[in-house]
Length: 468
Image (cartoon, rainbow, N blue to C red):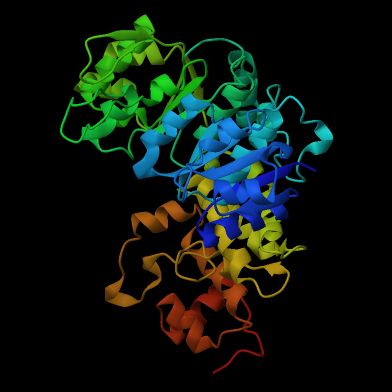
């Protein structure tokens, strides 16, 4: 069982990370400072050290020097991101920005331990993605998909990952583009080097060039010292630029030079330096169309679009929906100590009928929400809350009566391919055991008379146990 040392001065964060890792099958110790860690433990005895960057007394990076054979994962806030990059130059194996979610932390830990030479297969945590960080990982161990479209994605990743080719990953938000980038990196010869991920849409336009390329002291107001950029931090490894369609024009020109010449120049510097970086970019936008309107450089597009990987939206992966849901349910159940959870047949049908505009991320959120709210071992449609209002299904606005009838909203149209009659029948059958006729009619936005008439027309018998 891998041993992990957490060094974090905030008790709440330290406790949360400790419980997360213990639940994932690791042996965990913790301390509030570097001094406390050395007083109570021998940092060199651990397989991994997870440390906050800023600690009382010595900085977290001091552990890199004091335990040179133990990999150190640095935790940092966004405000300290540049210092985190500097810490990687000092020898930290990776950094993770606060706030992070559980999956991000587990992915980082698993990847680092799998790259550690002395980590054997038996030392891997009891987790669904325990082998996700191995350099020879298969994409199917990192991403889930049995449908033909995903199998084609896996085949393409296997072919392109061992090369130095630049890759452009395209797909809607929430489809798993970052997982594809991780698979490309971990299956490449660069797997032992860092994978630096940058969300171009999350960094202010005024800071993007400084973040990517670094800057010299005094190059702009607030530049009190020289800083290393994220591209330089990825030297020898891979750089993942997510949402590259949001990159400003000046940064696009600088990035083109990196791709063409393999060199960078810090903001405010007259000197360039060579970098060896494998570029992986991703976007949900149509970059080709953006080149025609001047929103994206055409020469940069062709440099990036050497090999294209398209991640299909979840609505095109019908046969994968329930498999993904079951995996998310198992994972969330383990996290929350609610094992043995199952989807009801009605919940399965609701999952298959939903259009998933938020893709896999939306599905994972729905399962997490249902797991939290579940009081027994059954996940029902109401717990999934796919209409966002606590109901079982989305009810189109055209079910209202008379002259107030309105056309269906775009949201309702996007929620399902079902007809209005299907919606009505599904809702009534799902809820008539716990709702009176009056409550059913109110929920549907119709009168009791219309409810009765539709029952007759569709052949839906009224339950004897129904209310008034």
